[in-house]
Length: 114
Image (cartoon, rainbow, N blue to C red):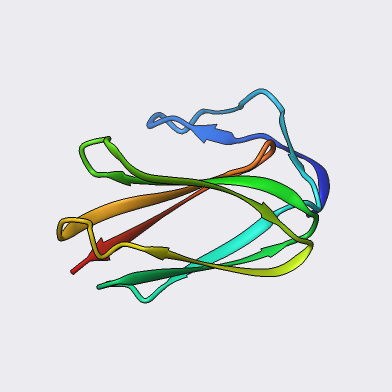
C-alpha cells in the first residue's frame, strides 16, 4: 500500500438508504518506522527496537496517564535496525505512554511500570 491511497465510505442509514462519503487520500511513504518495546510490564530498563526505512532524527517521550512528560530524549535512527534502552527505575509504578516522533510519523505505545 505504499504511495497515495484513496478511500471513501459507504454510509447506510437506518432506513436503508445509502450515500458515499467524500473521497480522501492517505500517503504511505516508505520511510515508516516500526517500533516495539519490551519487557512490558517493565521494572528497570525499557528496550525500544526500531526498524527504520531511512536514517531519521526521532524524539522519544514518556508521558504519564495524566499528561505529564516524565522522560524525553532525541536520537538519530539509522536505516535498518536500531535499539535504545531507557532507564525507567525512577518512575512511579503505573501506566505510561511512549511516543516516538519523526518529521513525518508518530507512533504511540502503552507500557506498565512495575
